[in-house]
Image (cartoon, rainbow, N blue to C red):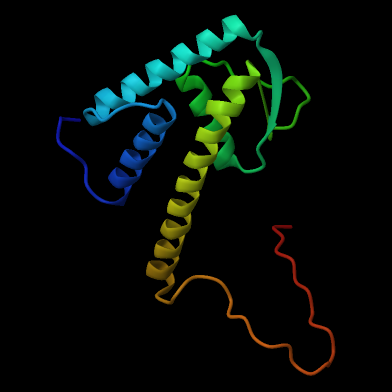
Length: 161
């Protein structure tokens, strides 16, 4: 890949995610890549500083969906944190040894902001793909007033069995 800027929704998403990290590193404005790298360095320095003041403790995080789990693990690895899980623990569990302040002030708030941004992007992308493939409007079912009482509606559950 050359030095050219990618365009489109994915490039905008990447830039937004970088700005979120910069925000949590409490950085000033700089060039995009430089700002992202300095933000990561500041966050790593804060992590080390807190580890000296506050002994790291073992945290257990439960992340029910695959996207959130992948994002959270990647965010920890970006800051040099080793995520793990014990044999027998569910795939939804991510363990790490961290200082409580780092989790509460930086890691978890940044993760929630990144997750929210990605979730909105995935929702919009999913609707776009559905609309292109099926050539109809995607989205939620319309809300209607309750009809007069009749037979109860039949429930259907999707199953791959």
